[in-house]
Amino acid sequence: MNSRNEKQRVAVMRHTRDLMPSTGFGSARPKASSALTLERRVDGQLWASQRDKQLPVWVSRCFPWSEPSRFISLRDTEDEEFALVRDLEHLSPGSRAALEISLAEAGFVLEIIGVESCEEEVEIRTWVVRTRQGRRSFQTRRDEWPRDMPGGGLLISDVSGDLFYVPDTESLDSKSRSLLWAFVD
Image 1 (spheres, helix red, strand yellow):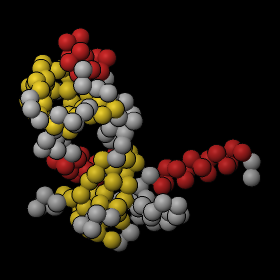
Image 2: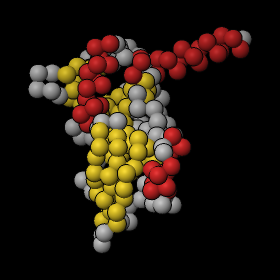
Image 3: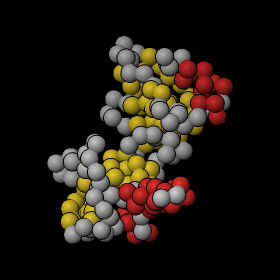
Image 4: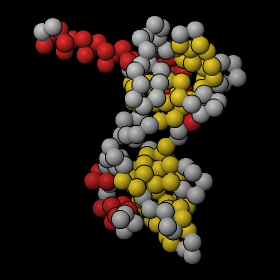
């Protein structure tokens, strides 16, 4: 087989496996016999259908946070992965819309565009920030620090588990950078 045919075969395989169900680490993926279909039912639950199997699923975003439309794990009620969506672009428009709604509900991450203040108290830190969604205040434990993300940016988790993401610290104003960097290891 010549190298051009081999490259085409590899490209087709990569495209085909983008919507394949997960079969665990190190195991072969089965052939794509039917595409993944997603729908939101009347009760608001996301349902996934693939190869004559239908079940309710919930979504879990995988890293990197810098690519929110890629690598989305669809998990069943037993927390087992039913399918991995490598990119929303590979879904039909209807399935994509259903998944986007579920992502918005399940993984609401506020994007910080400015830091107004950060006050330390006995066991807690109170942040006042500007986000794309408006001004917010939240609290973190004093020993909870912003985390560097593999794809870039910083992630801050508040005491209730909400997530705040700073995609590009260099784009923040100087006051925001100085307040934020005081808490970054």
